[in-house]
Length: 175
Image (tube, rainbow, N blue to C red; front, side, top):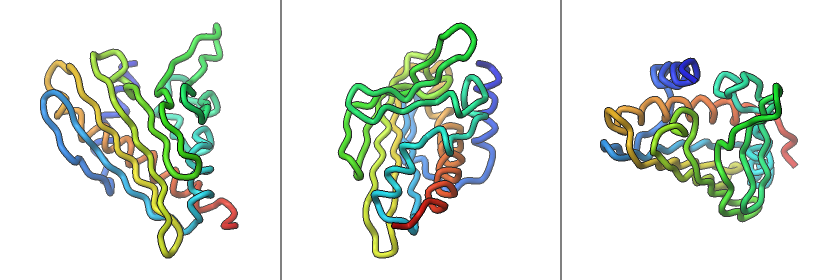
């Protein structure tokens, strides 16, 4: 877990086209917007294929193949532990509008062991040249030292994930 947290902190040190929308000692909001040259339905399908693009460095098992996403209300963005059958629920799906929007609740990464909860809102919209995927993550609760100190690291981690997603999504068939 300490190594995972260190990786999140390192991700915050890398330059990213990202935005900390707001931050306070009790919470933060970050946003990523990714323009794509693919149709919205392709962008949505690519997003839901999380094991194909999620950075394995930001998993507990260091293998993105251990990730799953069940795209339905109550579905889980989960990671299975290959040894012993354990695992972790990263986020819970609470809203799905196929092809357009998914809302998750939960605490990403090391936030899980803190008294923090979050909402991850992913929206796919059509543009003249394809689509844009906007990811908003808002988290609040208790973090010893202030949640505002975590915002840049979480933002950097999500920026890295969205860069990987963009590469994956734009490699998909355009039809």
